[in-house]
Length: 130
Ligand code: SF4
Ligand code: SF4
Image (cartoon, rainbow, N blue to C red):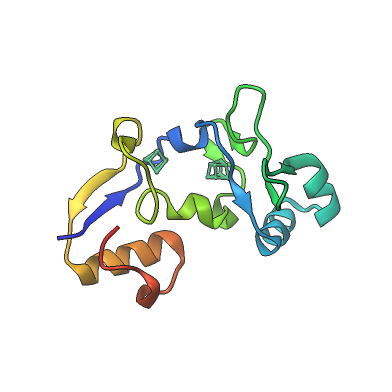
């Protein structure tokens, strides 16, 4: 049976080193959410990806995502798809050692329903298991 991981909002995944890739549409939504014009948002909160093919969210000097503030995500309602998709649509070997998401065996239908709710993706685009 598929395993759905229910996020416990421990914020560990917001503290890992790595790039949070963002699209133009996500930049527009996050800028609007913060009351900024896109140019200002890009200047303040983004950096060039290491492959120079697009933008990612800036890190704080300690490696945390710049939007992690006091245990909350400043752009939670409009956070990037990459953040929404973890850990059910992408993860890496051993992620459970740090991520506190609770695993639960569910039916394929339930898996698709829950992942759709967590990621905002249509149910019919969700694979039968991760
Ligand atoms: S955008 Fe929000 S959810 Fe994504 S890494 Fe940053 S703080 Fe975490
Ligand atoms: S996905 Fe995992 S690591 Fe990220 S906030 Fe949720 S429980 Fe924590």
